[in-house]
Amino acid sequence: MYSRSARWAVGVTQKKVDVHDLEVGMFVSDLDRPWHETPFPIQGFYIRNEQEIRTLCSYCRWVKVDIAESRTQAKADSVIESPFSQQRKRKDQAVLQLPPLQIKNPVDYPPLTTLKRELKASGKLLGEAEAALHKVAEQVRQGETPQVDVLAPVVAAMTASVVRNPDALLWLIRVREHDSHTYRQSMAAAVWALLCGRHLGLEDGLLKQLGMGAMLAHVGKAELPQDLLRREHRLEPDELVMFRSYVNRGVERLAESKASKAVISIVQYHRERHNGSGFPQGVKGDRIPMLAKIVGLVDYYQSLIEPREGEVPMTPAQAVAHLYELRNIEFQSDLVERFIQSIGVYPTGTLVELSDGCRGVVVSHSPARRLWPRVMVMTDQHQQPLKSARVINLAAYNAERAQDDLLSIRGCLPFGTAGLEPDQYDVTGASSSRWSLRRLVGG
Image (cartoon, rainbow, N blue to C red; front, side, top):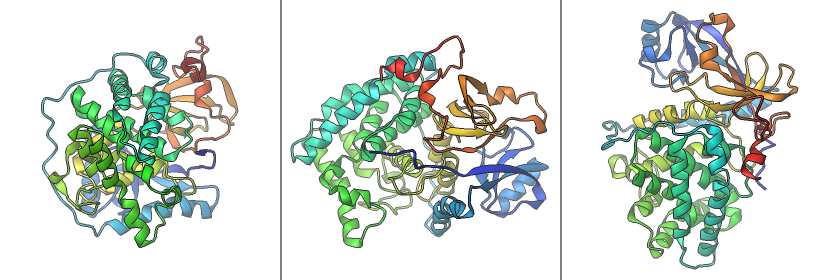
């Protein structure tokens, strides 16, 4: 059983620092002016070099930096040092600069429905998607030609849902339990990919191919031993060769099933990396199809925030910072930035603790102020569950407040944190409407 309850995340406190006292490696979490008035593309980033300090000095007098806290120093080391030590190891990798992505005739997708209405319309979609994906994987496992057409109507419905409202499926995928890591990885990657594609303005046909490719990216793993998959980050050299064969295995099975060339291309290239460090072919840059680039990026992000059981997860904020460090190394720079813009630093479904001690879950994010999303507060300052949740739009709440009175996110919390069960509350925050997610979707 996929378990979330064992997770916990590091909290952070903010410290006000004069820009002239900044050092390389610090994480800048807020500025003394609106982010959109500066050249920094995301809200919250690690200072990588002296040039970025000089740029901050030309725009700001002071900034806030995050100071990580934890329950014990040992846990702080395991959560912070382990994942981010990977960044330091990657800095000597090749860097590749390409022109920005060009989307032909981008489509603007304004929200067409409310979160509550879309949850009701699409609440059973993920269950249907998991059942269809399980059927395809079982066919591969049995050596049969997979009938991938069973996924087409589900992916079409998921695409339509994300077009209508980008938060509903993301909410569902992040608060729903799943029996299999592989199925969860595939479905979550599909949702992230559709969100990114929607933000990029991809037309409907491309969105459906993108979602289908993300769902099927790991289908080749059905032919591999389960023990090998459970240890995918701790493999011997010969085992690693077998593990990496899942890409070509998936391509072969999908070719047999007469899947579209676009979907097969996504599966074939989703583990390639921008600078050529990926597999199985080691191609780079513009030789990687755009849809495969998107799936590779979102698949990697999902593996950071929800790795296999027993591995240390990153918080969404840490994962965003990690991706930012990999710009033009493993992933194309503007694609990273536009993905971050599409999901925010604290994506929908992230459990958080606010600076006043109250706890809740992110309902949606503000594109202009990605560190100030809408949060459904579920506990009081003493972590006692509220009878009725309330939604706070942090961007609106802080609009006219002095710096010392701002309400912000102190840090992310693990799924399973006591008193935080998002599916038991009204995500609209309307006290007169007493429904829960379980009642709404029939779960």
